[in-house]
Length: 80
Picture 1 (spheres, rainbow, N blue to C red):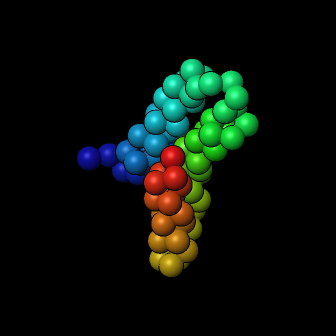
Picture 2: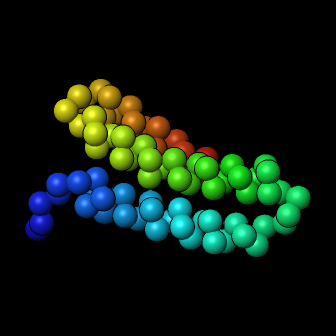
């Protein structure tokens, strides 16, 4: 088992990043009239999952902050 030194080493971060890229590619086929509503919202929320995991990693010394950021990440995943 390798040592986790950076948030990019986390499997959950890697998977969320891959999913955000996939969602971006898939959303290119959405109707153009949805570009500024549904498409934009799905893209932003999928990127927020990864961003919140990164922020949680930075706050891991503070358990409540760490949990709060992971909870935010879960919420963004559900929104997506």
